[in-house]
Image 1: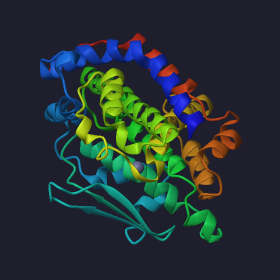
Image 2 (image 1 turned 30 degrees about the vertical axis):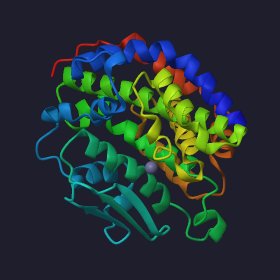
Image 3 (image 1 turned 60 degrees about the horizontal axis):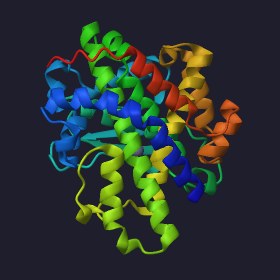
Image 4 (image 1 turned 120 degrees about the vertical axis):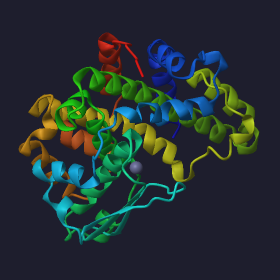
Amino acid sequence: MHAAAAEASAFLKETSAAYRRLLQPLLLNVTGLSLEQASRFDAIYLLGLRYLDRFFPDQLHVSDILGYFQETGYLLVSESEQLVIHENDDPGVQPYCIPVNIPGEIHIIMGPLKGWLDLETLCHELGHALSFLYADAGLPPEQIDFFQSGGLSESFAFLFQKICMSKEFIHEVLSVDSDLAQMISEIHEVKWLTLSRRYAAKLAIEGENFRQGHLQRGEQHYADTMQQETGFYYDPETYLFDLMPDFYTLDYYQAFLGSAAIEQYLKGVYGGRWYLEAEASGMLKQWWREGNSQDLSDFMKKKTGSPLHSGPFLRNVVAREQAAVHNFSF
Ligand SMILES: [Zn+2]
């Protein structure tokens, strides 16, 4: 825990300057606010991407996305007994993937597919669902039903979430104009960096609180650190609401690093559009057969040959900075 919290603090230092350079023009353009004026509620609006929904393809249905993944080799997405998707119109619905029985019965609960955030949700939950659907039914219970941590499953979820918000996917699969696809993916990468820093900051705070052994005293430390690292104002009173159970903050933070490393590995082997290659889906399915027999750290060492580290994620940040157009028009 302490090693991971220290690593998160180093990650925050390394990404701080790039974060501010990328975030500030976007925030100003979307909300009219500078970072000094904005609160976490402005961050929620910014990251919700609803202001981009007028560019979302009309008539895009969940079945289109499932059909796309089926064509690229994930045949089980069309097995409606095994993968059940519930589109629930209740505005309070919390998206979730429920593995009732791995690999035989997986449910995804989500709202209707009306915009970019819904597409991200669908692809995120599909990343979880696919990793369950392709697990080997013959594995012992401790390797299929019990999770050492959520890190590996969240890495697959983030990997699929990232695919559907890439410029290539938005332009070539969803047929959105190339300049718009560039803008939407650029904004999404700023969102990605913002979220990764939010979880890194939360992890550093939790590490410090556990070190001190006074969880209740953490309110001001939380508000100060979150504002310092994200730039947005946080109420001290929201500290305990924002605390996640079961060290899930650690799982999310490591999944940002893990998904970037898996993506760069797959790109290295199969090229930039790896997700279109049947051999890439074959490799993922092969990996998924092993269920939870490894946690994220062991998985990374065994499958990609490198331990879990922030290098691939940081390379994406540098690439985004170099390619940024900042031509936000909406
Ligand atoms: Zn998830």
